[in-house]
Length: 109
Length: 250
Image 1 (cartoon, one colour):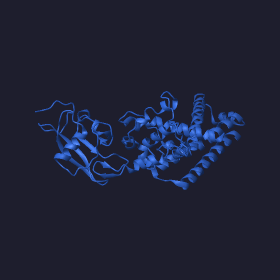
Image 2 (tube, chains in turn yellow, brown):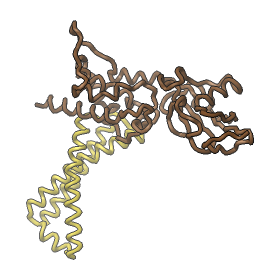
Image 3 (cartoon, helix red, strand yellow):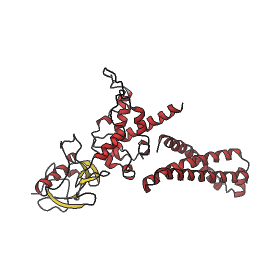
Image 4 (cartoon, helix red, strand yellow):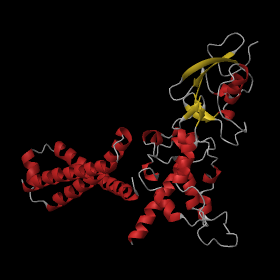
């Protein structure tokens, strides 16, 4: 891991710590108030703050997870080099696409 | 006669014998069991020496000073890396004594390991003083209270026994990882105001084998016989390399 990846992983970890806390709080709120899926989508539809929050969440996760996975794979499987880096870029792109798709689906629902 | 000891060795006869399992051979070796009389204030190094002198003179191990100055007698004692000259047998609890060569280094024979990869990583981490092309003619004044000097007060006491290197899980998982001792050495030089090789040194400790691969398990700090904290030094290198990144981007 080089300093850029190191700082990127630590920085996104700080964002994720806050984002996950907010995410879990909203889940607990929805369960406690017995909100239906329709009621939840009614609140998220067209809500730009909601969309912005989850886009930041998804972006942070798509940066954070591949860097950590890269270290795990390097240490536990011996997979090294450019092929690993490219695979992690692809994994990051996959997380980003799936996450944006999910956030947009709920925003546009 | 039964000697008073807190060791409470099992498998001991009425004349108090200590059971010692010692690794024999190279990587594909096996353990050999010896019996050694229990003696007062006996160190693990005393035990190994007694076996070599009285039972099997082919037993290979390494030591020099016998008093905790040189660090050359380090071995794995009951699964933990230690200086054998500073480890009293009666402090190790009950059960047989199990001795193995240091982990993460090639075994030469029995309890002796090849230290070359350890010192190769010292070089790879630029763990040597670089005076630059035009070193100053006069002595540099380094105030003991300066922040750079205080940052390495402990780190400069390292004597390269490789106990930390043997204790480090990251070295086991990633054999290229420079390891706590080499990074600790690099940290002492990063804080040496006379050194002119900082840029190349910070680059050397920044790769996939460098300081950012440390998981902060702190095994190096826990097992260091001199109670130093290579983890602190590695954290310092992380800060120094990150700061250099910011400086470059500005």
